[in-house]
Length: 506
Image (cartoon, rainbow, N blue to C red; front, side, top):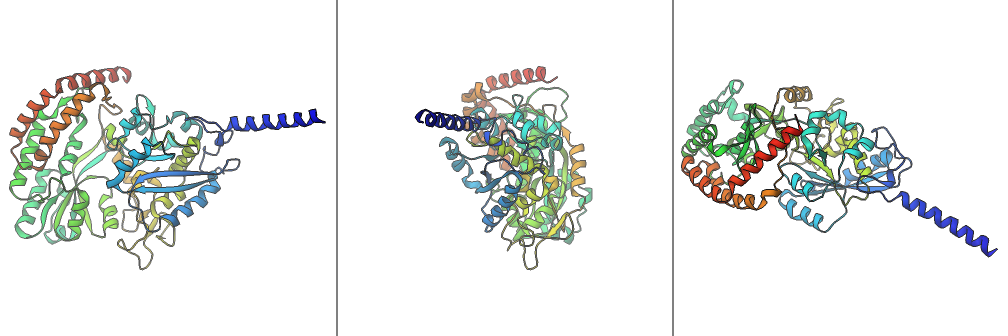
């Protein structure tokens, strides 16, 4: 009897060990998802999966109705992949401090917003993100066909995929958002605007006739101009737009770069910039336009950007494009979601990502909230505010649809062009691809030199970009100090890595 009892205990223990073994998935595997096809399509159910809470961390202000939307998404996700969702927005101003603490402390979470301009390469080098190629092949099978080869190619580092980009505009357009009431008042012909020279007549008219109105706000203007003309690598080394040769130049020696900043110096002397040009940003520009204190704010553009911002701010805006769209590696990596190495179920996180790309219902809950409360449908794809709700009183403002999944599935607002997503397709097709698309510079071999060069840049860059001083004098001093900080070694490393990348990517 005792032997039989022990035999039963041993059999039970073996069974428990077998189940436990099945549940120990690594970074690229999840036992909770093993043996299922739940992530292969947005139409699959979560049958057979253990309950799991997915944590999504992204930069945004927490809206009043965050919990309501989170609960509604969780109900839907439970049906799909037996998961709930914790939406964890973090204020932009606190993002670096809070997310760095999460990483250092090994806090468990699943998905993190990242971008080329938001520590993507650094976090990959530190092992923060899980490799996604195998996970996507198994649990995100819809994603490659939706994104396409160029998006995926541009998102890889060292030939491997560590985060998935938003399906949105593939590249940047460049120009300005303008206060429509002033455009109408002075009968500006914005259809003919194609260059900075064309903008100058408008700025002069506003300066001469609208006391208290600043012609152009935001220090970011010079950044958008640089992005329109160069595929920047590091330390003012860049591949020029239109280059047929995979070779980096020093922008501080490029006549086009110098001429542009001479023009900015002239604009500064004419009083066209805001007084806070060294610190102001696009948000400040929009707030000034809303208050009737500014005419234009520089922006990277896409089709319908003016209508989107009109919905968000409640101010009528129009846009003018002063440069054709251009696509760099930075643009391909401009908005991404990566799976954290601390995720307890990377496979479930990938299933969720797959739904963000192929399931319009889920995406629009995240983007716009709950139908009937936060928006009402005017047609299948068009929405508006419910009666009595405005941009200022809404309780679930869009957290930033450009950060998530397949933006082409996002609803359009009643004031937007119903052909917006078709225009996006055309925009993406006409965007010029950089010859260096997909190249990512590894800073590790020259990190000490780059740290010294960054200190030099802090001394000169802001003054140059403000237009406050003679650019030729600033650039001459900048180059001299930069050379002493190790610029030649950095340049040699860039040339070396570009050559190696070219051989590997013929």
